[in-house]
Picture (spheres, rainbow, N blue to C red):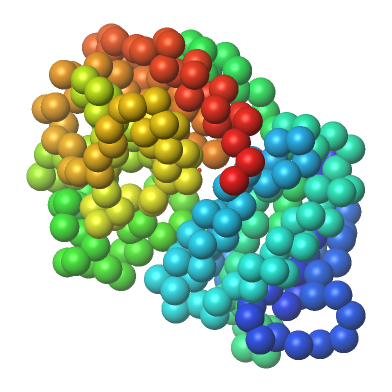
Length: 295
Ligand code: PLP
């Protein structure tokens, strides 16, 4: 039985009107979606996953802004940030313990068989897994070819790289491939020798006193956690840089992390079986900052 709270959003996009509240709370383990909804049949939609700490969504504005960006990339109507915010707050209020939780919220285009069913949204609020060990002990990654070159967003924008779409089957397959190779996670690479991001995380590399991450133009998802880590780094006098990172530069990095909203900054301890140096002090300091983050 699910302990999460499901809030179905009947009027998820801007300008939709109707009687009563635009959302309703349902038991999370009750079937709430038609089998023909495009989220299920085509993966046609977008989502966000955000951390909830002490009852508040972290980086709420950044997640909503990225949600709107993904919607625009998929030619979806613009999600209503106020409706999503209130729906999520309703879910949080009903959660038994919202001290360390997460929300996944979704917008899908509609229904494959019934064009009168407009965009459908929902928010699922649930207690988080405990990632303390991963943050402390790190993860071994493998490099996996993503199958396109660094200029994918220019040459093939219809691939929607950099949008947070519901079509994550490739990302899941990559994680299974990592497990087959005895690793915990993945760093995607391009066909022309650059490193992109993980299947559910951004890459941050430290070279001396500079933190570096791959820019959105390379078709990666702009990470809210990476942005938080950069804000922290700048506050303690490090510099930060958005630039393309070549695979052959990785070995020279002083430290590497995978960053994501719920798991936060996890050190990479090995790349393709080769141990990589870690920066325990910065990892601990960044995660303390990220856990306490309220914006
Ligand atoms: N890149 C991808 C492909 C992701 O799916 C995610 C998060 O799920 C991220 C990066 C990290 O984004 P954030 O830090 O906003 O969670």
